Amino acid sequence: MEGIINALTDRSFQIAALVSLAAIATLYTVLEPLLVKDKLKERMKSVGNYRDSLRKQQREALAKKTKGLRNTSPQGAIKEVVESLKLLEVFDADSARKKLMMAGHRGQGPVFTFMAARLGLPFVVAIIVGVYVYLLGGFELDSFGRLLATLAGFFAGFYLPNIYISNAVSKRQQKIQEAWPDALDLLLICVESGMSIEAAFQKVGDEVGPNCPELAEELGLTTAELSYLQERKQAYINLAERTGLDAVKGVVTALVQSEKYGTPLGQSLRVMAKESRDLRMQEAEKKAAALPPKLTVPMIGFFLPVLFAVILGPAIMGVMGLE
Image (cartoon, rainbow, N blue to C red):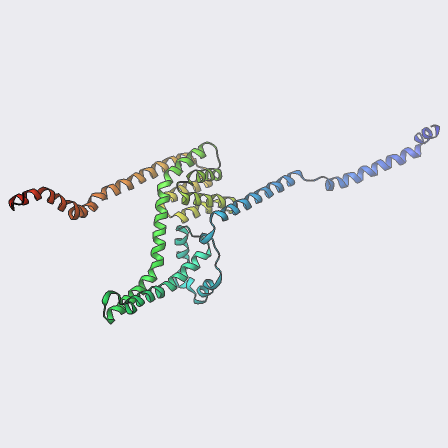
């Protein structure tokens, strides 16, 4: 015990201990920034990982909703034929892609299928018409008339894909137009309740899905694009291009202005929802006003002869002495 006390009171030992402590403190000061982790960086990294996982889940859910012809990649002989004949340049692939997108078919697969159909259907229809008029003896035409019928089948087959896509676009736009005012009302409620626009689109899509799956699909696509596109403006513009409706374009303009300038969105959505409802009522009134002229010919051809027979029948029988 006395030796320990003598060592502690020794001036040389005290100097050595202080120098050792100073060296340890200096070494800790130098290495301390390397040992301490950046908590903010770790948090931001975890947020980025969580965002990536959500983006992956959204893409997987989107792929399940849009499976099949709507979101396929071109493969096989169709792709080789279209590329070898350069049909994408001949038939204006950009315009065809926009029409197919408005009809609900996305990706390169539908574009290649459409191009192949425009190339092959004229020959298919011409062969069917030729077999019918030449081999089966349909329509009892002369040789020149059969040739004209075959040529007519060829040109009809050339325009059949465009007619099909145009009808599909019209039907899809009509369904979206009918459900759009109700969707705007729901979107207004969600936005004014404090929800973000992504959550509002997702909620509205879930609500309108049973009645209008086409609109729910478009809103789901917009929600996914808002998650991973660099410019949110592009997601809104894509929604307008996919639908091709003036009512949707007006709402898209309001959303873009709200994102860019911070203008209030609730009042704009309220006005546009009212305009969409008025437009829907005007369309219904237009159809109702067009009904009487359409009923004129059926009434003249079917109702009036029966009415005349009922009214004049007894009088004619009485004059002819058939009673």
